[in-house]
Length: 114
Length: 112
Image (cartoon, rainbow over all chains, first blue to last red; front, side, top):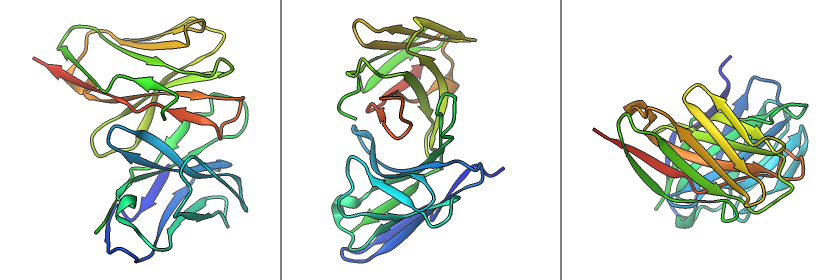
């Protein structure tokens, strides 16, 4: 099992450009999440999904959109990148049934917006 | 992550015990977690505790939960250089896996 994978690993964008970050998981998890990590601020939830075809806003959704067309994939889009979106982005997934609801994280995407 | 608070840094001598503390705000939280993040990597679950427990031990790791004070701690015995990482406390609210709130992380550094 590859677990949770993210592409790309690094990206530099100019202000106003758009891009899509891809997250894929092969664990048949229902729940998927996008976080951003900034120094001293921990992880902040951008959007999440509790199943194929459903998405919901997290703590900091502005400037981002997401889609979950397939259960194994969760896409994060930036329509018009801003320097404030410079961050490390982590995708995670978790099982929705009984258990500890452990989240499995991808390796992250480091995004710089100039 | 502002509702889950941790100190940002901790420095410990190799071989000593490390204690990382966390306070959370929601008394209805059901699961509390400790995640570890090594440089350049994502987070990995270290251990978790269910809210009806006071303590959980797993090899060198001991988790203590004080529900009255909403205080969670992680003790790492015999701290090694490989324990250098950022440690995140997290709480799950309302029995919903979509409402896991992370703290800002504590960077643990080990000195010889």
